[in-house]
Length: 172
Image (cartoon, rainbow, N blue to C red; front, side):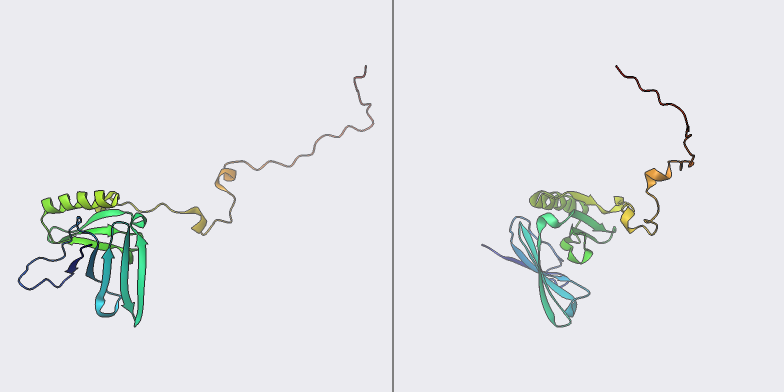
């Protein structure tokens, strides 16, 4: 099995390219920027089925093994000057950069290839809408349920009682 190496932020001597991974030559091991890690660097191993993130925080070494199916999709992030293709996870600290700083046509082709390779959707970061509000985290959840609020509370009235009357029962 062939390994590919790349470094994020540090280009090889004589090269003007930044991070660029080949999706057809997996597994890949490379370094990426991580502001919370010691030395601001984390090591990433990218396989077809899993991603392994290795970093040290305050001297403690850790390795996080995440299945590719746990990621939400492949997204295009950035502005007109610098763009990046990112493997997006619900936890932003687990997101993985795949391609940084390329032209628009090349990014769109790579976006489709990475998305197809991992069987994940292409996410449009600009069209993201906020998550809906969850009822159980609501501060007033001890109140009556919503469907009961529509009902009118009944007026307690007493049923008529007929005293000293004969009961009529049909008998054969």
